[in-house]
Amino acid sequence: MARVVLAMSGGVDSSASAVLLRRQGHEVIGLFMRTGVQHSSGEKGASARADHKKGCCSVQDAWDARRVADRLGIPFYALDFRAEFDRIIDYFADEYVRGRTPNPCVVCNTWLKFGQLWEFARQLEADYIATGHYARIIPGPQGA
Image (tube, rainbow, N blue to C red; front, side):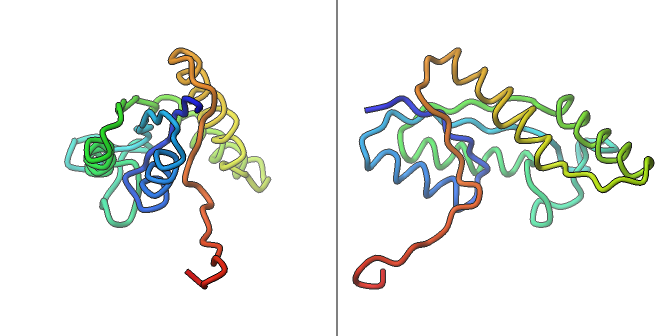
């Protein structure tokens, strides 16, 4: 089967993706992309997060993702993408200042998910990258 680097947020969708990929026989490598931290770190600005339950990408989220990876027996890496994410926030603010409607998700996908994430996956000789982003439940024949 394939070697897959999976972006893990610590949430249900990426955790379920890890389980499903393992069940399909793939070699899964978990990766947490740190883009922000909780205010308790003393950091301010685009990299700060006020509350774990209201945001993402906190230290607690990284711990959650690591616990899932440990439970599944898959390797896990946490990479610091705060500087790259700050560039996305800068783009977002600059577009508003110019009177345009920004689309930070497109920029994030290009720079981080399919830029930095893919570069890391290549270093690990991965065949694919995966995320739980936009995961959906599709009922099977029995409705489950």
